[in-house]
Image (tube, rainbow, N blue to C red; front, side, top):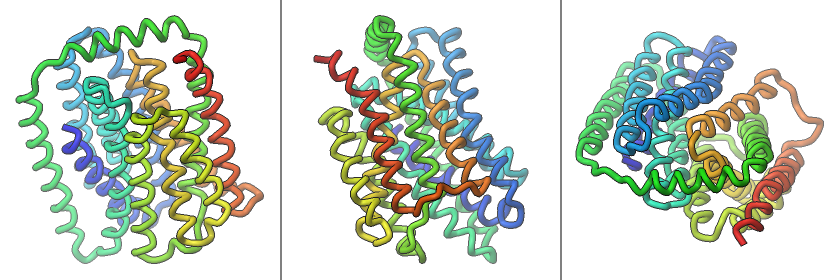
Length: 353
């Protein structure tokens, strides 16, 4: 299911970027505010509602939870496709529901297989590629009917494939025995949750601001934009795998320190690409770290961090700029992110020892 939902992530973000840059946001800047609010901010209440539903209705039945999450994913796809014809609010709401359903399903599978966040990085990474593809295709307005037909057909095929896989899956009870053990551990260290939450949320806000507000002069043209997008996507995917193998603390150190150095020279293409690659490696780490602290509330954890993406977007939308150049802004963002993650991770590393 990871492969199916990851490809769907590419398609959903591609549809949204195509519609926002080519239709809804082309002549109305306020559409971006409404869309981003629905796509990012609504994931928190949707995720919390999914958590409550699972606790009340499904208990410790992993198969029912998987089916429920996949149904949320499918409903989000249907809403997103509907949003191609109804408006940016429906489009963004569908995007939010897809991410909640697909994200929670990935979290379950990741726990089930003891991947330690590796699958989270793989799931989130195609989104950047979808955004680039959608924005690129939005310039071909003469063939918009065929492009929309392509998105819809691809979504339908993948929905049906996902349903087929879902029906053939077997039950896995170990997931919830593991989750129960983790929940007991969390109860013993409950005071650490607010600090971890604040640190992770702040890192996500900073990363969102950098993504929306920091310009690199070499990122002009399709090829440079595509290369930058691949750097972002590969960074997210690689981080989940790397942190699962060497630990989150080591992963943060060997990625954010090079990111800070590369941001200092990000006006040039090669160091700029490495800055994007290393800096975006924080994404799966923050998500997995918060979910580990609150294993019974994965939907709320996931949605809270996407709410941070919306907060980071607001200063850019309001045209508020820091009194620094883009390179220095990136350096400061890397330093602050590193300090925040060290605050969150070092106490955890001491407890493990």
